[in-house]
Length: 447
Ligand SMILES: [Zn+2]
Image (cartoon, rainbow, N blue to C red; front, side, top):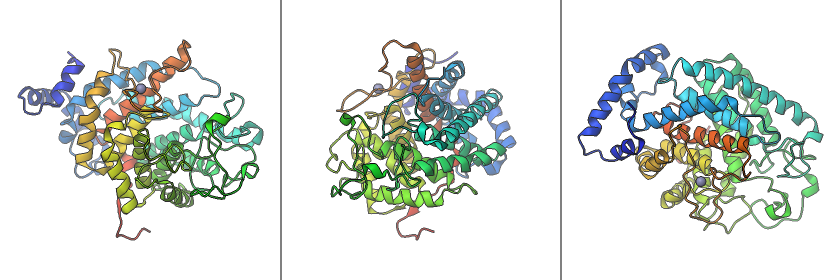
């Protein structure tokens, strides 16, 4: 009964033909009674004014691959083993949880149970991080230290967990979310660097504001002169902040700040200052903000997409700087999936940015990457990384860095599938948390 996937993708981009219309109608008929029921159940006020169920289903070509992606998550997410020191599992749970929430209209009944399991796992994860962060001996001695004995790289999963609970709260259906959000905000605040950005997490001897006195050195003349100098990767560490980590945290912080009682406002203010300073002259964002001459790097595209979305979520005005970054992204659009760190995360951020910017940008995103996303899905529903390793510094998410260890390889597949399923589901415009943040024009005074 399922169409072959390349066939679906091909039809999606040939609107002049007769059969796609027939196909769309058939899909509508298959789904509309369910959609109508769910709209009634959810209450019409829950829907954005411009979106009707019918319109959401006009995007039918992404329905099938998204459903397959969800099925793959069903089969594999809850079997992921705990991996000491590697926080990929909670991150993946949080993204998958967002997918289950966004898909509610079509996979209802099944997703409620999935959401509850994700909720329980992530609650325990946050409790664990809270416990460990209290005792400095659990923190790494320097930024970017890899040690399964230390609490490392936790800003990413904590931030994504914030997105998950924020989405639950935005849907008005979780008492637990209301309790979890201020706790998640507190963890991210604690890990925020004095510049307003985020790195992988707090290190030992780092104050509440993120200042590590031991590392404080002479000004280097850069935008963060006087603050601690970045530790180069070759010297066995990471800089105290990274644009990619900052993006993930700032997006969560900025969106959670729209929910009453989140207590995120002061952190949001400091994050705005970070982005205003971190932008390069050509509008792009480099690996870390001290790299002032890195504007040529093609891997900046995906990061810049994340930074644009972060600035939007932080409620920053769309002044010249914002516009310059958008122009850079449009000029370097094809490079979005050629990312460093995690190309699939860049795809998530690219999708969120284009979806937020408008119909033209979102259509361009779908046309540019839709076929490749669907073509990279295997029969089991696994969605793989679509990078082509075209630029210097690209790190493919689907190539295992751990050789033949099955649990790592499986973890990667669930991770890439969760992120790309999110991208496919975003087409339905079902991320309620994101709808709470409206664009701020350059002329309107921000409150
Ligand atoms: Zn790749």
